[in-house]
View (cartoon, rainbow, N blue to C red):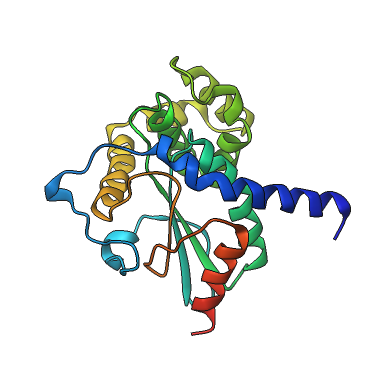
Length: 223
């Protein structure tokens, strides 16, 4: 392991340690009695709600034994802090753990829902992961602002070489907004109140560090 990699991983651990504190700023007040929650800390989430047939799998395990589901907000600083950890774990557990991403835009984040729809539109051209990464890599330049970054996201689509006519149509398609909202409503049903929220095989573990994350995954792998 190189010195730079050691430093990077150490920084990631520090960042994860403060995510718990940051979550308070990325919570949604919405929780209709009719929506749930259907699961609490330590209980197993209903599989039919946690992962839908159209849920996006970033990585797929050969045996399907362990699945990590993340409800995320692309404008959320805590999600951006967790992003490199998730990428590291995806690489480390490639072929052994399935990673699923689900949208959960926080209403107070002006560009979160717009960004989610941009990722969904890119997915229709096979570029979901590329756009998903682009959002986090550039979040500091557009996040936490009260002005629309529609043109910024349009620029990302151009950079990724997307068919702009199709991207524009899909981005503004009401069905795309409904797709994002469906994820968010499922999150509410499952008791998600802030981002990022992780489920590992249907349970929400206490994650304060990369070691906690790996331990939770290893515990499921060894069952």
